[in-house]
Image (cartoon, rainbow, N blue to C red; front, side, top):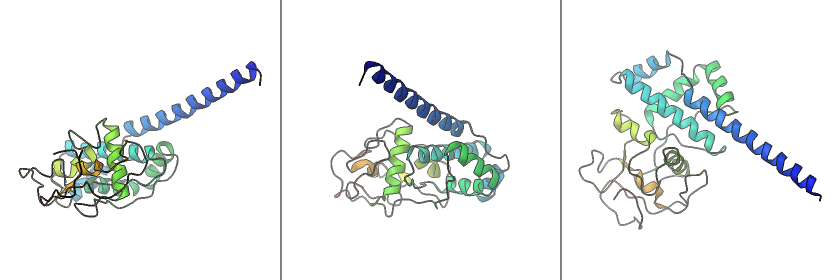
Length: 225
């Protein structure tokens, strides 16, 4: 192979890389800047009348986060960890043309609705929630194993006092936590090996501390303690 051919191949690969990278950045920018239909706020407010305009804007921010995670997951399923954001997503889908156009530009495909999903139990996280946790932590540039705070998608139901929401605790051993004994231990989703902030699967199993005060199953390195 001649030097000219090698140089040509390198240039082609570089051009392909920058084309793909540019397309990815364009899609993520579209998601981040997307303006939802104005009447969508009324739909969410009807379900949760206690929410202020600022609260609903935060819900929309979290919905944009979810679409960001779905794009980053490379077609792998990402569970929706928030009830209020799930409601906003479902209502958005009813704006059929807007939603289809959004999906085409943001994701390059139609994203079908998957119902909101928390951990199976306070001590067992399924693959979709683990992936949502890792990707949400990666987006906010925090460690999935030792997070200093909850990513927005995992914090918003508690933050906005969603009565039927999923409540996650960062430190499940803290008896002063408002969710102690009843919520899900989000920090311990990252206890299992394989948490790297990407779209890969982590092994399931122990290392998730339930909200009842029993930490016997939690291995070393669990965040939030």
